Length: 312
Image (cartoon, rainbow, N blue to C red; front, side, top):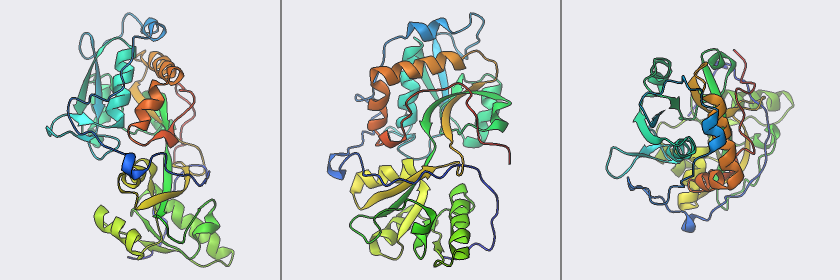
């Protein structure tokens, strides 16, 4: 537990704090870790998307949509009970896109650091692994957005902290955050702003163990946790011991988007964007996110290569 002595790096993103309630009660939230995934949402072919695929597009395998995903933590992606099949929201989105394009889905588990080279070399057709659109990445890759990049502030259910809508709401609180992360820099900037305005400083807490971190909130040793909303929302829905007090863009003070990533100029981005929009329209997209308690991060329309976070 300590204060960071300085801002270690700058970030970009836009404050959009809003108090939300969990979309599902903990008792109703069940996780299927079977490799078969019988509840996974499937889709029919989308002719409009298939027609947008250029005839000279090179797929990694004939008749297959090969997608790289980093298997880390649910709800995004983790190994099923067979210890080899990836399940989660990212595999579910990959399935919807593959179905829309009329191709069989093949998922490749990759380390986060390895996806850029593997994608550029044609080892796989796309990456669906919580990749944020940035201007630097757009120089090498194309993007089709499918989820908001959202951070969340989580507090003890029934605890004293009710809502966090703006920086001043964290004044005087004991807040857990990951060291050397974008969210840490956001928190420290808010704290600087508050102290300059004569408000109480934040007590910043750091934990390496997720279990200890959650216990700190539940026991009252900490007031709030600031981190990726997808992960925290999943844990909150599972046990109901924490709840969402506010959200804001992961690109503060700019909005940020998560997107399907493909090779620059490969010709797949437009088709994938059309596929995602078709699934948004028919309701499959919402169902897929709801399975993993990610409805609050849904978008209303997929975009191809939107403005990304600027170069630092």
